[in-house]
Image (tube, each protein chain N blue to C red):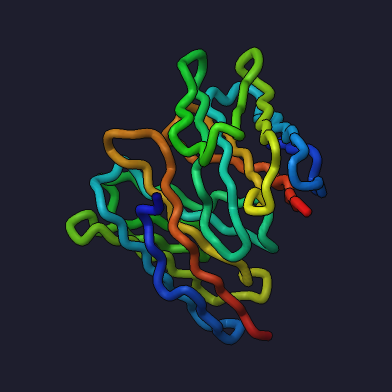
Length: 111
Length: 113
């Protein structure tokens, strides 16, 4: 079953703009992870945020976590055409070890 | 260092045939996962191996699916008597322990005709 749900399902932006996508989940978590997938093949890990963290940065990526609302957001700043991909959030429940993936947000960056 | 590798990258098979998909995880990673992804969908968990513990098979969709992991390294996912609904991309991932970031292979695209 999918615990994480991303919003929006699809996003189209102009190169240079920021892209924001959200993830909501249902149960308490150990950590939440964001992944990127190009062309429907292997996923690439972007960032992991633990339940006791509120914000994390990696290059042009900024992730926030609000455990009280059971939600997370991924912000991509100054987007590039190469950022065009599907982005998935995945949660590790606090009493389990399996990653549970959402259906993803498809981001298209227009040149 | 080498990442997770999977073979074959593509497999076309006739309905009713058996297929074997292979995954070579990153050396030293104790956890190995198999997922299935249908077109435009998220990832569906299939099975999880952690060290020498009994695998978590709770995601396998039917008894036609099985997997093994030999020597704590290479894993093989076997689908018997394939059906058209088995068509999907099968992804393998490994991680150091089960709760950390996962490293994915490129996947095997299975098409059942």
